[in-house]
Every structure is written in C-alpha cells, then in structure tokens.
Length: 385
Image 1 (cartoon, rainbow, N blue to C red):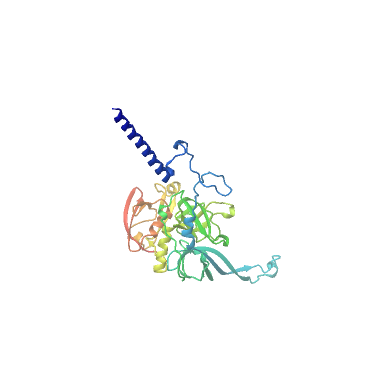
Image 2: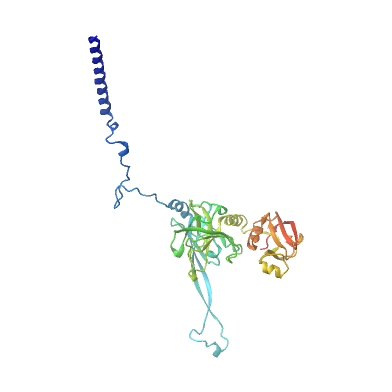
C-alpha cells in the first residue's frame, strides 16, 4: 500500500516539474505573454508629442478642402483683356468757356483699358467658359493656365442673355474640371470660389450657399442665380464655384452693392444653365431658345384688382402677332397658372421655362381667364435673334 502511494507521489512530482520546465521554455521564447500589470490599470495609448506641443495629447482631425481645390483649381484660368476706349474730354478743363466762344467741337481721346477675369476649362478640346462681360468688346484676350502656360484664345460664341461666353485654346494635356449638378445644391452647402481677384491668381475663398434660384436682379435677361457668401471680388468673374468635392456647380458672375459696403452677397450662374449654353454654342455657334410669343409680367393683388383681374400672379402682358400663343387663342390679361405642368411662380421663371424648350417641341399652358381655366398646347418656335 505504502509502496503504491510513493509511486503516485513520484509521478505527480515529475509531472509538476515537467510542466514548469515547459512553461519556462514557452516564456523564454515569448516574453510578451507575461503581463506586468493588470489590464484595468493599463494606461491609454498616447500619440507622439508634436514639436512644441504637449506629450500625450491626441490631436483632432484636420478639416480641409485641399482635395477639392487640387481637383478643381488647375482647370481655372486667368483671363487678361485689353480694349480701346474712346472718351470725350473737356476742351476747357479750368472753366466753362464754351459759353464765351460759342459751340466748340468736342474733343476725344483714346486709351487702352485692361481688365481681369477668370474662366474654366471644361473639356480636352480646350473650351473655356467665362462671363460675356469679361471679354465684351475686347481688342485682345490672353489666357494663363495655373501651370503658367499662356495662350491666345479664339471666341467660339457668346450669349449676352445669360452673360456667358465660350473661348477655345489649343494646348496639350489640359486639366478639365468635373461638372456637378446645381439642381442638387442646397442652402447651407459649403462652396469654394476659385478665380483671379485683383490679379491674385488661383485665389480660393469659401462660404456657404445662401439661396438658390435668385431672380429679378437685373444682372442678365435670364436670372436664375446661386447666391453665396464666399468672397467674390473683381477678377473673380467667370471663375469656378465648386462644391466640397471639387465639382463645378456655378460660374461666378457678380457682386452686389460693393460700393455701399455690402459684404457676403455674390451670385453664380448655375452649372445646369451653363451646360445648355455651352452645348448650343459649341454645336450651333449660338444659343437656340424656345419662343411662344408672350411677354409675362408679375402683378400684385392690388394691381390685379385695379385692372379687373381676380388675383395677382403672372399675367400675359403682350402677345406677338402671328406667334404660337396668338394662334391658340392666348390673350393679354390671361393669368399664367402652369407651364409644362409646373406652377408658374414668377415672370422670370416663366421666361426661363419657355426659353429652355427646344424649337419644334410642344408646351402645355394653363391660364385663368376671368373665372374660366383654359388648358392649351402650343408649338414652340425658335426665338427671334
């Protein structure tokens, strides 16, 4: 009995010694398996100390629009123009002696006026979109790319009604901007304005979209602007308004009341309108717009009651003789309710809706005449030049 007990104790002792030996070998090969402190008391990992900073402080992520600028800015160009200006000068600068000497032939002088602007390269063929007013009446035009290359463009076509112009340059390996969709732009979206303000090329400013669909500003015949508070200065005209992905959503075109000290109000032509103008100018050399022969005007409720209309809205003020509108029976005084199934909210919106229709298509028009609602279908024709 005692002999068997001794053999059992000997076996157990050998197993313990063998297990300890095996554990020693494993730890020797993998010392990281030994914990020097309990997991609960382990200190959190710390970021390396920045030069001049505090050791152990975790830095917040950097918010940057550098990627958007890298995508868009190379396609934004500077435009330099020179035009010959003729102006009348006073032959008697120190007094009004004209009354003493009778009628005097006026004196004129000519001078070179130089202006700054911006543009955007939109395809590999070298087409550049800019504002019409940037190159209007220019005797010479020069384009400078972000990489320093310089080219003399030719004018493909212009559209004063939207204040847009298309130029073309012939250079290899041109950067091209990506188009976004202005129909998806929302108030509050972050936007970047890239241009050549005051000759400071490749200047980037940022802000938010303050409003969309701004109308009746008197800037162009077809007002439908994106309003932004991104700083837009003289020289930004024709430059790019891009979203936070670096996609083109508008062409910067105007600042308002700068002489009155107004800040943070600038306007851009939405890229959806730019896209249509660009297509027509490249294909036809001009913009083809629809026309039905009416002149819409906004009218208030008070004005409507004074002329015997039931309410205010958008009234047909004039119908051209022989036009599609006259042929289907539209009359001055009709209130426009719908165009193409869409409610008419302003005369400007009505003009834009008609103009974007292609000649040869049809347009459904709903009007209110007295207490009667009329629904008519018109043939759209090409607008007069």
